[in-house]
Amino acid sequence: MNMLTNHRILITGAARGLGEAFAYAALQAGGRVVLTDILDERGAALAIELNAKFEGRAKYLHMDVSDSASVNSAMSEATLWLSGLDGLVNNAAITNSGGKAMEAINEDVWDKVMAVNVKGTWLTTVAAKPHLIRASEEHGLGRIVNVASDTALWGAPHLMAYVASKGAIVAMTHAMARELGEHGVTVNAIAPGLTLGESTQYIPAARHDHYKNGRAIKREQTADDITAAVLFLLSKESGYITGQLLPVNGGFVMH
Image 1 (cartoon, helix red, strand yellow):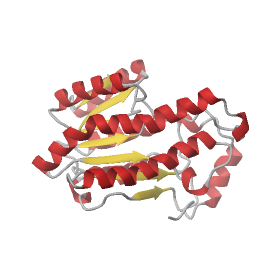
Image 2 (cartoon, helix red, strand yellow):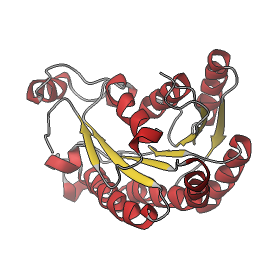
Image 3 (cartoon, one colour):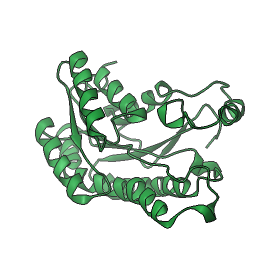
Image 4 (cartoon, helix red, strand yellow):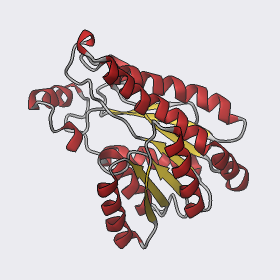
């Protein structure tokens, strides 16, 4: 439970959902965590709640990952508060095009999904890069975990923009791992399946049943099923694993 003791972690899209779960787990594992999001009221309230439980080891900052000025400003403030950075979780993402055939997706929606999910991962990684290299040189750390999706592995229909963006995350993970490997910084991705939570409540029960019945482990997936993989990939123990995609989906897709 102490695998991230004193590790300095930044998590994007952390005001709710998987990001919130990752933040809680990282704090529980001994880390110090900066939560970023654009949901400022919710993020600030969550940080207060977490600080009451984890002795002031959490901080919330506004970060619009699709805007370079916002990313750079938040990264500067985060690394100042943390006195560096050991790990980054690129979790911020939107769906927006769910339930629509490819020809029905508005171009503005497509562009927004790509701006947040793909461009945002790139911008945040670029901003974090010098700090993670320093962590690698000084502490043998420097970890990036990108949150992809198993939809990119099996081609979920009527989610074209989202699937395309998550496929890009997988490809970017490989390229980032090659580029940062010479500095000792590792870059890996996880591919969760459909996970119970606020963002999936709109999905019909029949669709949830379809996923559940298609898994080797036949139950709903929860955020807790995913956090252990993220913690391991952020830890020192994962130092020789890079450029990999880890599906965490109960065997719905076997990669």
